[in-house]
Image 1 (tube, rainbow, N blue to C red):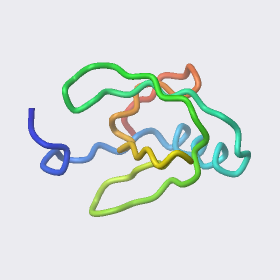
Image 2 (image 1 turned 45 degrees about the vertical axis):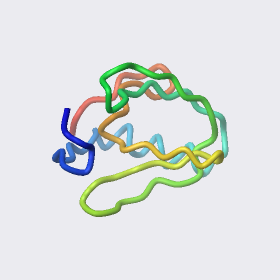
Image 3 (image 1 turned 90 degrees about the vertical axis):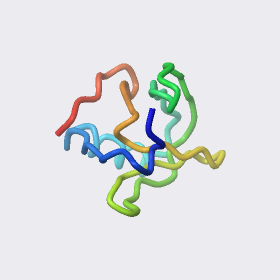
Length: 84
């Protein structure tokens, strides 16, 4: 599998992106199911403190410092995440 930096970023749907931004504002705990670089599913729980763009991709950061590229996100609070 290519390193994440070498893989083309695929934007997520605008509706989920908006929900991520709302979660930042609400400061509510979230549940995120994401695909790791090795291809395994991982569940992460925590508060999202930022959603931002960097070098042609979008990311979120949790209050514990965990960073996740948005196209690795598969579910957000139980809702499936699809490409835009």
